[in-house]
Image 1 (tube, rainbow, N blue to C red):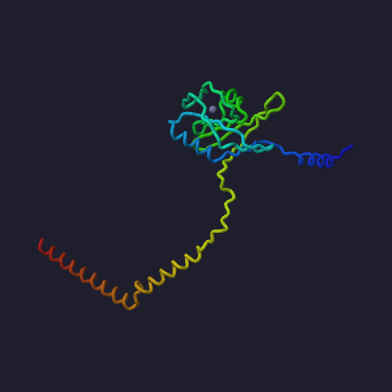
Image 2: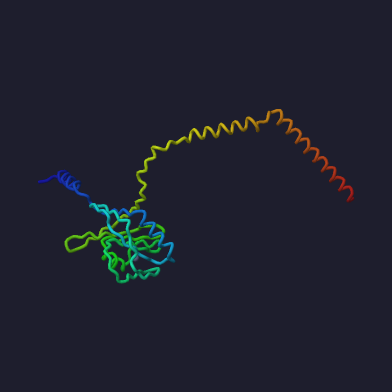
Length: 221
Ligand SMILES: [Zn+2]
């Protein structure tokens, strides 16, 4: 009879040999995002769709091609009607209004079943949802998708850029110190004299104001 620990051990080693795909990672080239953003800017809030192809695929990652086509379509702010046309693209990206991040019933039964991969785009959050139809014998198994945008700037080598921030900071502070020394530092005696002169003038003004008020008061009576 197997003990519990033996059983767990066996299960673990069996699982570690295989990748469990809960979500398909889809790498979207920046160009496709810019294309979608650009179409949004040219429309007045209507939905739309573009099609593209899969450039590369491993067991858990799909990379999309930069090439795209805008199919002939009739659109409103809540629907897309595709017009009869022949093309052989396997990926569709369609737009939803902001916040509507789920596929509609129509999406599920029409768009999502006629393409290998379907992505949902909103102007606000970009690629918010997706579905990959894994073919298995005579069936398709829909797998959820996690889309990431390839900005093409992940591995920028900045070793040629030498930061001289500390040096610059020192120069600035040196320059300020020099400025103060040359032009702005008053001697203590000078300040003392200046303040005394100001105080004397204030006292004189106050005395004159007092005299003026007294005179005014006397006149009235
Ligand atoms: Zn939709």
